[in-house]
Image 1 (cartoon, rainbow, N blue to C red):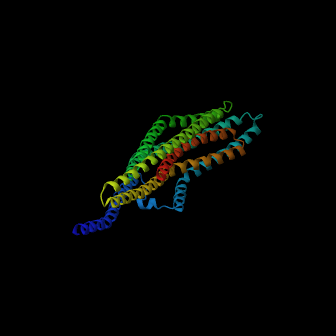
Image 2: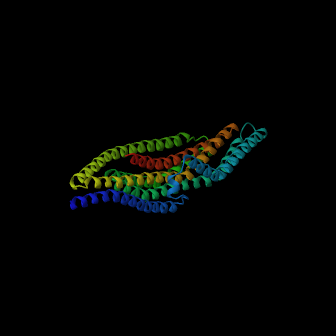
Image 3: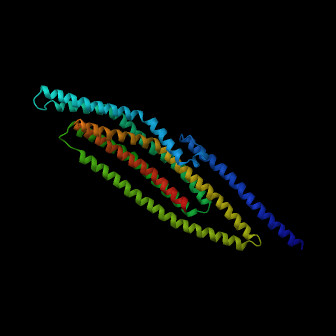
Length: 361
């Protein structure tokens, strides 16, 4: 009789204590992980902590975008004013020159002066934008190299051993490849498009618009195809791995429940509680990492979009005032900015999609 009572008391205490211990473990693990996430965010100059970034609403993100746009708008606006002044000045000087010369013999001189002045005004800012894009790619790579193993470890601790391993290996490998290719080929390609744009505008008889267009289409199509294939591959692998992890979890619970006498069910429930706690942490950490990537890429992407808007408006103005060389220059520069934008956005989207896929498994 005493043994039965003791066993009953033991079972009751186990049911009471196991959830408490699980909750305590959950709190301690979340505090430790949140501290690590805060350290990572501070290293990358993100002025949010783990709690703030995981609870950001869509309106908060819109507000952040508005703030970045406002901070980055001064340089593009100055460039736009310069381009408009150059287009108007070239048109006026050409008209005035044609009245004193036969035909339009002097128009080429004015066009060349306009292009040289535009190149002088645009090139320093353009190189800064390209440099900022490369720095952002390296920054995203550094963040991924720290965050992905942390997040994959949480996923594996919650039972997703195979899916976490696949995610960790695939994303880190792809990140290294993208950074390597960008460092070796992106800046030379962007510089080449800028040189071709200047050449085509200074020497209007030597049209290079088609060559710049081919380079732009080739790179953007290659990036689109590669990213689509990679995301599809990760989706298939993590889905299959998630099914395998789910089967392994069910097997583990069944073995625990059947092999431990009397209290096997309680231990199995405790295992489920702990695993569920890690899944909650993993979802929150994955969301925080996704928002952090968005914040890292926000400033350079906004800068590129603003400069591309300036190129579009400047092109329209130069066409209005018949400044054909300036139109060619701005169109070619916009193609280079489009390449930088596609690489930067695709890199960030790759991480976001892969993380979202893993969060759903």
